Image (cartoon, rainbow, N blue to C red; front, side, top):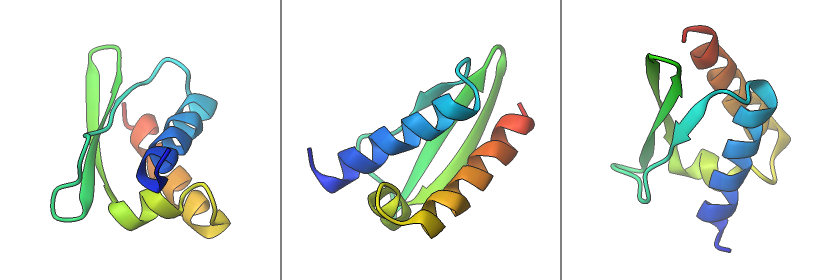
Length: 79
């Protein structure tokens, strides 16, 4: 598994830890070094952008994980 796929997997795990009912769609490739990620809960959908570097560093760097987790929690709270 390459580092981007490993990061995507970790992202999915973080979302599932916060709220198992949220559906996630992560694009295969980034656009302009950013992933536009869709979070859906029931009829509500929210898009967040996460830098490619943050996805790559997510499994290994606690500071990145903390930052991304906050973005995810804020997005889920808005759903």
